[in-house]
Amino acid sequence: MKQKLVDSGSDGGAALMPDSDAAPSTGGLVAGVLMCVMSMSSIQFGSALSAPIINAYGPVGATWLRLVFASIALALIVRPKIMSYSRSQWLGVLALGSVSAFMTASFFSAIARIPLGLAVAIEFLGPLLVATLGFGLSRQLLWPILAAIGVLLLAYDGQAWVGNLPGILFAIGAGAGWACYILLTKKVGNAFQGLEGLSMSLLVAAVVSTPFGYASAASHLTGFGLLEIAGLALLVPLLPYVLEMVALRRMPTSSFGILMSLEPAIGAVAGFVILAQPMTPSQMFGTALVVSASIGATVFAAKG
Image (tube, rainbow, N blue to C red; front, side, top):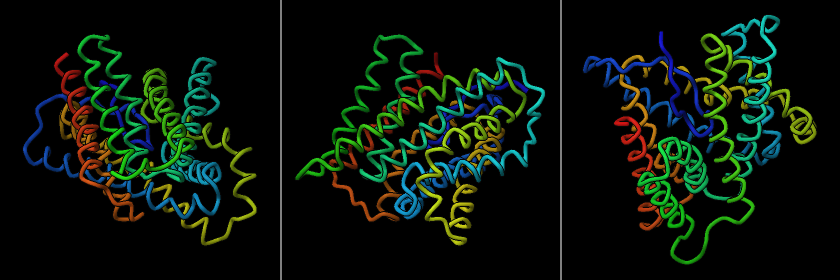
């Protein structure tokens, strides 16, 4: 089955999923939409629910623990043929795994310092720029400019700037990591069969983050904490990967991309419900601008 690159969740990055541009049935499309919503909700509410773990083990420690559990779970499912890969394949997964670890640690460091909705919106600028630059520097620059205006509105609550500079810089780092992740995933996805590249990159990410994460988390680990982290690792990223894979078999990839553009809004809702992070009307409008920019870039790419 032909494959193509599809943007995935902010925590999951991008994954190579089966291309499904054939016209689906109405029932299949509805099911696909529900799966997309469930996937985005899993990613964003999983990120919000990670707040206690981040506080307990630190952003790098939480990153390490979740990558360890997620990589082991996916490796048991995929069973990658570790000893059979070529030098170029190993170089690809080493690069992708390192970027994955950096992206996740940066995102966790950001949401430890600034509201979740703002962090997701800033991070979204990374893949949005990739999509824009992929079609040249003409009028497509409208979309990242529109998204940047939305981010500025999100960063001001009407009385003061929310968050702090380190949190914003970490979110920018996560966005840069996400942009690199998308480009590297395309290369790795072409070099491996199925989800073997994804599985290997997660294993590499877990190993790369171990020297930093172990020092931060090891002394604070408890039995209950390990169970909690294992559950969150299943919630993000494994459940979203499965839901998105099945959804793409039921709907066109262009429709999938438009739906996934709602992720900043769902991140804002998760921040409000789980973390009690309220939003002013201007911040809601800023979220709408980021979502609109992402939808616009997706529609233009589909037409192109």
